[in-house]
Length: 226
Image 1 (cartoon, rainbow, N blue to C red):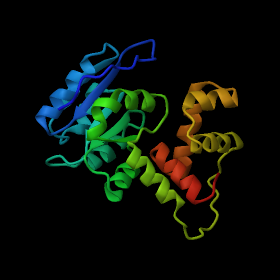
Image 2 (image 1 turned 60 degrees about the vertical axis):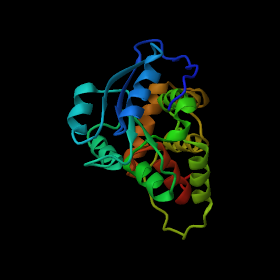
Image 3 (image 1 turned 90 degrees about the horizontal axis):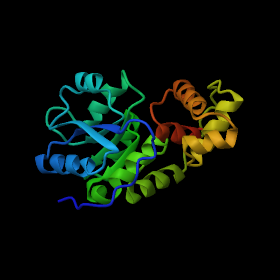
């Protein structure tokens, strides 16, 4: 059961953050909706027990954030993320799951998830994770972050140097991204707007053939692009 916690204040000054929830556990689905409804900073557009119609639902609702369970009937959350990324790269997707094994974590990341939060941390970490992902971060539970770092530290076979035709500014942006900086911090460091940072990030994703921040940073480190 989720415990009520003090919600962080949404730093966005315009409209509240709109959210779609995909969770097959009815009790948890209702608890997530209730938790987010405690603050006017968040609006849960809808909460679904499966993601069989995820394409139509996301297109109709156009949410800012999707909270996606992995293990659901009919179609897994990872497959749902892949479908969403076929037409929408802007929406932020946080996986909510009981799984903390390598296979599920990296499958979710490569599918295009922006964050990965274990359900046991939901009551304390959810609102902070939503704010972090909206600011350009990649929220993860501590054990997941440790797993990613450990994986990146493993020796890799030398690969032939590839020319992804990144511009100087795109390389600078990617280097700052790899250091864990948010879009706002990158903008301040480079003396450009956050929108310009987003444009650079989108071009980096396209040139590296990746779909998420985590995948871009992993590829950049493994292939010594930065």
